[in-house]
Image (cartoon, rainbow, N blue to C red; front, side):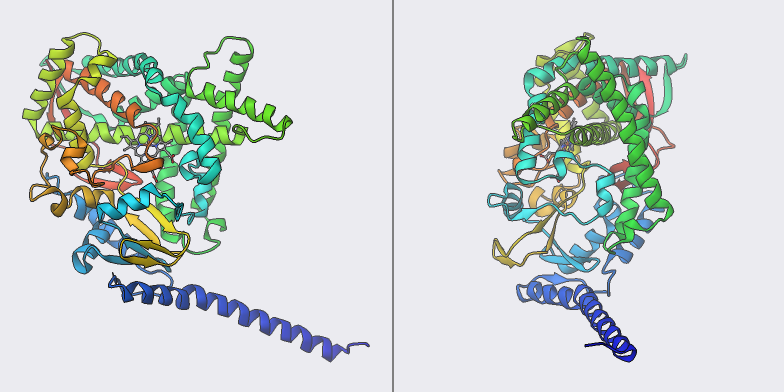
Amino acid sequence: MMIGENGFISMVGAVLCILVVWCGWNVLEWIWWRPKKLERVLKEQGIKITPYNLLIGDLKESHRQSKEARSKPMDLSHDIVSSVLPFHFQTIQKYGKKSAFWFGTIPKLYIMDPDLIRDILSNKFGHFGLIKGNPLSRFFVRGVISYEGEKWAIHRKIINSAFHMEKLKRMLSAFYTSSNEMVSKWEKLVTLEGSCELDVWPELKNLTGDIISRAAFGSSYEEGKWIFKLLDEQAELFVQSFQTAFIPGFSLLPIKRNKRIKEIHKEINDLLMDIINQRKKAMKDGEANNDDLLGLLLESNQNEIQGNKNKKNVGMTMEDVIEECKLLYFGGHETTSVLLVWTMIVLSMHPKWQVRARDEVLQIFGMNKPTFEGLSHLKIVTMILYEVLRLYPPALFLNRCTYKNIKLGELSLPPGIHLMLPIVLIHHDRELWGEDAQEFKPERFAEGISKATKNQVSFFPFSWGPKVCIGQNFAMTEAKMVLALILQQFAFKLSPSYSHAPTNVLTLHPQYGAQIILHKL
Ligand code: HEM
């Protein structure tokens, strides 16, 4: 049977109508019905939630408050939460700890109870997953931190072996060489009067970059220098992209920011590929030491090639190796420089603790090169580092989401709820830490973390459970080495030009730098 021209037009019209209705239905489901349904489920269980603004939720308000907080420095105190995460601080003040806000169209529940944090992070039944919200994240940092299930287990096992104690011991000379270079440079800057003013923030970023390059990749900072610059820029762009991450397809738009993110991704991959190729050549010529992280990753890549021949998944592909390198470059340098910079700032604010830390360092090492055993005996320094990690945690919060209907304490949560574990708010919570929660009191940790937290998961700067930070011993040993060398040579205090402005740029940066006056001892 033939369809006439009119019949054909009506058929196309009908298909188009169905398509428009279908699209409209899905859009309504996405921006209205689903959010409202989830809101009802939460409210029925006594969870308070901010009013829903169509599509954008609380993103605009949260952005506005962060911008306002960033526009001025704060008082010189450790009570930083209202400046660092102003929107979350205000929301919890207003709605209580059992509350939620809108990340675009998705409700995000605050988790402030240490028992619930333990349940989520131990993730015994695999019900809590990572959030895969921002499509641009594939251009930033992936690797083991972004994987789950079998892929995560394989990568975690391979990378873990590079961070065993005996491997760390061998990395100590890299820690020392880089730190000593920085301290020697500082000594040259000191004037005849015996002092100098220095913004230590870029210095410490360079240092931790240098250390991760030497210790994990065997190459010097000079070769990796550009990678750190690019990763820093990528982090800034990535934070900005959160504002629009909830709009499907936004990351594909050819706007300036998206283009730059993709450009940087390519540049970093090319730079890493160069480092990898140099290493592969050295391995072939029998000149490379395979003990460091890159060596281990490449070895596992060889296993993958072998394994593929036998149809078994045993290692990492070359793309995997590049992603893990990027993660370790970023994770290994950014977070530790943040810990070091706040430690220097805080010790400048608390000269008595600075003196106590120096006394301990001089008692254990004198003016000699710190040893691995000696560093593990630094009790006061460890207490100070923990208290700095409590007050100024480099990672401010962790995100997870529900995969299926689950019970969490008394709550029954449907799939698709985002969970926010606000590390910095929990670390500053008076109910958990006492009325002096905002004060710098390293003595809290005199008998270790479990005593200080009464065995609760209320201190988790390195996360907790199976996905706990792989590099925590690396970071703590590195921080102790750097501090020991600085304390041996200098006394330091804040410069009058220092402005206290902790700010969230993926990690907790000092917004205007860390201007410190160094006095040669
Ligand atoms: C003060 C320094 C550091 C802090 C505060 C820190 C914090 C964290 C946190 C909070 C996580 C968990 C993220 C999540 O669960 O979503 C994490 C994971 C991770 N960190 Fe660190 N980190 C530090 C240093 C390092 C260093 C030095 C390295 C490597 C050289 C490193 C490598 C990793 C890796 C590979 C993971 C992923 C683990 C997994 O998902 O199984 N970190 N870190």
